[in-house]
Structure formats: structure tokens, C-alpha cells
Amino acid sequence: MWAKRKSAVYDHFLKPRLLYDNAGVVKYGYQCKQHPNDSAYLVTRARYDTTTSNLVSHRSSCEKKIAPPEQSITNYVNGGYYNRGELRLKLSLWVARRNRPYRIVADPEFVDVIHIANKGVKLPSPSTTSRDVILVHDWSAPVIAKLLQERAKKNFLHLSFDGWTAPNVLSFFGIDVHYADDAGNLICHTLDFSPYVGLCFLLFFTKPLNIFCRLRQHNIWVLGSFLTGSFIEPS
Image 1 (cartoon, rainbow, N blue to C red):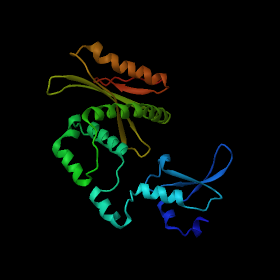
Image 2: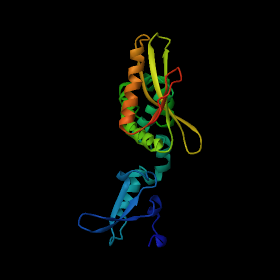
Image 3: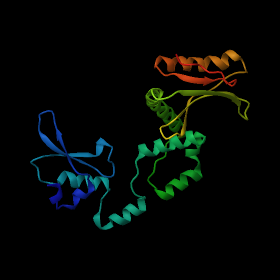
């Protein structure tokens, strides 16, 4: 059936798959090519239904077709389609990875540059971006924990600690975990990065010790070097 399709609307979707609802009715599921991993863009149709009205409606909405004769001009002027959630995610990753201030998303020149590409873009506020960074961190933590558990079954994990002082005289303590992947590449994840006061050994050592204990509770063995190169041997 899929090979014999005639309507051009099918080109907007991936090859359909069979779905079953709670009543056992068999349906076809058409996934939008523009959003292959988003279930919100899955269009269903009963197996016995041969009409394409719901597929056409989705395509028109997805491509923002308002007036077909002016369609190309409208899309060009508006800058095309963008996903607001994806934009917020990318901004959060950019700010966190490149050490950008949150207020950069409200910088007038930055806003102008974005609006050159798409005048319809609604940028998040600095406070929203700050919350998004925290959300991304919270979502990533269990994923990293599971990854480390799997990696610990194959090899050792190495913890490294580093204390330093920023130009504004604030002192910070960073804790990283390192391991080699299957290709031999060195991979590093920052487990924690927090301020500390002075060079008190207790403050300097308690946090990594607590992290080691939490890792050990998840059956993850680590080799930890504390500046002097001492190691925690596995049992």
C-alpha cells in the first residue's frame, strides 16, 4: 500500500507503522518527518480509512500554510519554522558550556541578530534561562549516573579535584570524573562545582568523600586522586 501511494501528502510523513488502541482497533501511525522523535506530531488513521483529510490538515499546520499563492513569500518573510522548546534547550546548553552570562539572551544586539533570521522568535528571559539550565542539569544527572554505572562494569573511574580562585576573589572547588571509552578517548564529566571558604582541609575533603560514598552506594568504584596522587583501591 505504501509503495502504491499517490497523494503527495504522504511525502510529508515517514513510512506508517501499525498501532493498536485500547479497544484493539488497528490504526496506521504517520510520523511527521520534521519531528521524527516527537509523539505530538504522530497522526493516526483507522486502517479501513482511505481519506487523507487529517494528514493534509497536519501538513498545512506544520508548514503554516495560510494562503497557498503567497505561501513561499510568507515563509520567507517569517524566517520559517522554529521549535521554541528546542531553542530554550540550545540556549541553556550554550550559556552553560561557554560560560555566558544569563543576561546575554536579553542583549539588544543578540536579540536583533536572532530576529534577522526569524522575526517571530520569542527569546526567554535571563531568569527563565537560569531555570532552564537547572532543569537540564537535573534531567542529565540520572542519565550520567546510569552511564557511570555501566562504565564501571568495564573499567575504573578516576576522580580528580581542583580548587581555584576566580578574579572576583570567590573560591571554588570542582570535582570531575574521568574514564576512557571503548575507542580509548578520555571522557570527563563534572560531578560538582561549588564555592568553598578558605583552604580548610575539612571543607576541601568532605565533599569529594561524600560523592565517593554516593558513587559506592551505586556500586561504582573509583580511583580518586587528591592533589597528592593518593588512590582509593577497589575491594
